[in-house]
Length: 128
Picture 1 (cartoon, rainbow, N blue to C red):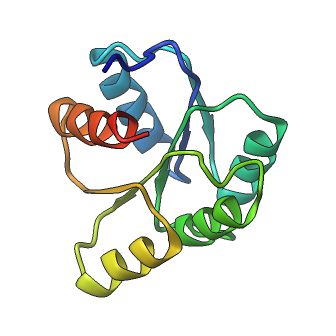
Picture 2: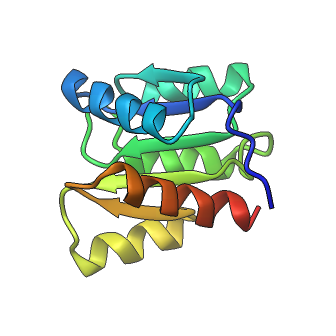
């Protein structure tokens, strides 16, 4: 099973430093076509414009949270199959459950490294 590392990845976080960290981690594992959005609404617009093979989104954002973004993606017929990885600083069980119920593909708790990110992406895309 080969993962297409040339796919477009959309990373979503309202914290610019975190976007840069995730972009650098993706680069370390050979994902170079990375686009970014600073909130869920912007991300949704980009996703609806098309062309992304994976979304990596922070949970805690305003005005649209990562969970709301995930719900919008899963409710959209064109987007609902898009692999979606949620990043959060909280490992609360109810958050994991809420994300799973909303259809998250996988979940990463901060802090994380390139290896963790690679494993999660392989799990998500390997099951596609």
